[in-house]
Image (cartoon, rainbow over all chains, first blue to last red; front, side, top):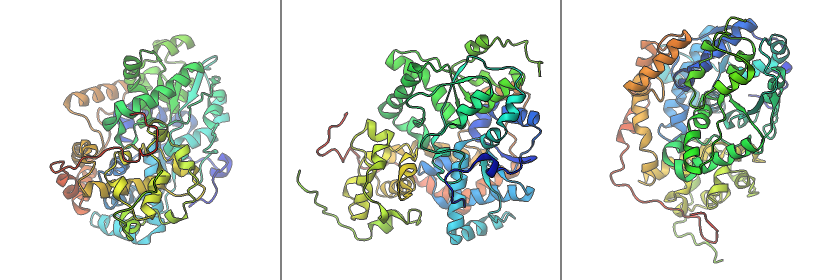
Length: 318
Length: 197
């Protein structure tokens, strides 16, 4: 396990991988399927081959942290999924902070407690799997940041004048060791926006949690989640944010789906579309609009696209 | 302020809570309070205080948190762990506090909503797979993208996920979840504090 808190992208990837295993996210393939698709399109443009495996299942971490599963189950699931990646001889790339955080935490537990690794391996051996602990668990955003100059050179739809702000997502920053930036004040998303020609905006509550983790959106929506998100969006609006990006489909769900409820309750309109950072990169790199899946959004992207002068027919300029 | 009296001092509480040995450095807590200061839930619910909960666990006092609503408010954002000078993973303690609370029939109403999702995930191999109507929406969105109508998950993956549920005791655990003899919870760390409720 990594002992350094912050690792520079060139050190994290001395060479950019030619082929990566992309770990399917439940929310990223069902609630916002455009996320998964955008990653595939961006990877194609950057010349990175994506491998996925239909035998991979949900990481189970969300319901584990809701205390609905005991760790025995999630340890076995993690060992099984990661052993599938190991069969491909690749490193694992997540596009959901949750999947990454949970897999890393559970892999770390198995690394630190060999008895848990043994326990998980005993269970999955019945299905013909064996987990060694070789595969590294990373997030696709780390590759995008490593390749930001290359991305900048390939921009065909510059996002000039667009005020974009980030929601980093707690479960990436909370990894603490071996991440791209200082978890206390990260700026790598803002650097990516600049590479795309957009104007990064820093708002006061940008590192505030989405509020939907461990199911509080189901149990404490009125008491906690809505007042919490109201603070976040109020500060974003005050800073003039036009578009927000995430790196976690779960955060995206909270920030996008909850906005109409905030408007109803606080009688204040925010209208800030929330998309994945890979969708934003795809947009700037000229990926056809229909491949980015903005139609899954509650807060529509239409105003942003109009501002940028991107129309529906304007899809073959790649 | 009267000093708190622990009527139920339990010397083995720490081991009982952290039964999976996931927060082995808990006693290195400096009580510095950075966790509480950086907690978005504490900013809305002042009586939710990770430092105080850690102190109660280390001091063998389960009386307050076990039947508290506070422990069900944590977002698991892990800001507390991110700022902790000693890298104490409070969220992993929280997960286990909740196990112990529900074992003692507290807070089940905050766990029961996930029983249904867990049982459906057992069938789907994916979490938050929707109902029939939601399925149609997903299939339409995915088809518009030129992707397969349903996430590419194999029958083998689904069968093996289900089998892992059974082999690890998750099926039995989830199926047994019930709020029948549920005991009430309330905000229990409010003494001497200004609260919002």
